Image (tube, rainbow over all chains, first blue to last red):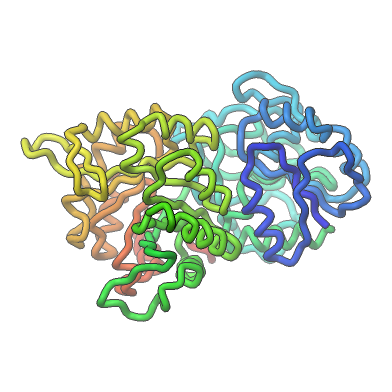
Length: 201
Length: 255
């Protein structure tokens, strides 16, 4: 069973439907108050909304210790879009806000001459081998919608996307995975990547 | 590099895709889920559903349709037609749409755009605009109610306002070129893409592959939308993309 964290803002429908489409069982949880890490073999932090509000709601609904415990258990934790950005130490959307601090790095506004948000289909440049990329075409396309990004390529960066600047698009440290794009909106490639995530469960 | 998007538009009436008389069986049955699935396979980058029934009783049919499509087709979905308030937007987005498009309602109550952007984020709000050349020949004015009602509002002023209100994208249809199949309204699209910084979707006038090349080469649009030529199977999205690629225009083609 994969738990999808509901922190009020995101449209969880798409990611839930995509995971169910590939045969995963899912449940949406909106508070960690009475939750038990042992019940789930995967955790997904989806992403639509703004950084400070999302952190605030995660905190208010007791998700911070739950996420920490889940990550320590070694089971896969997937952050999507804003959910990826929340994995880092600091976010600079609206105001400087501490993130989950699971990965090192800061989230800043995209400083490209191109239009912001970075919205549409763009291609990954894969930097590291990872089963996450299994059975995907070379330089696979994914659907992006975001105005903020991880400020620089960190050691955990596994793929980047070119948008006037190189933007980290996939990060991973052991069981913690972040995707800047929306696999649930990226057609066949997105479904394949979610299947690859499913293989890790 | 970000890719230029090709977007088929499906007109929906009473929960079915409406098709023309010259229809050949590329997209069969008029079942929206089936159509969406096929367009996804054929390389559509995004889908727009335009509800042309748009009465209150039919709203439920539309949300059910969006739910069904969203459970099977995993590319961005925009839904428009008759959305009048935040509750409508919420229903459609909850059903699985990624964006809602607002046309007449935005003109009547511009704060609907800002409210929507605040609640759901700008990326969810598409400002749809129908415009035609002014009688004077200088500039364009916008029309509402499916292009039937003149407003006297200047197009460039309005798209800038939409951007300020928080629309994350502009879907611009030229009444002058719509249905002509003589090509997109290059002059109008150029003026709009120079006036705003948000992505612009070109609509109205696509009749050949060459028209897609022209619109991307000569204007700053990010996407091009067409309905009939795709439905009737006259032009395949894959062929459009192949030719765009040959002309050096970045498109999503998977190796």
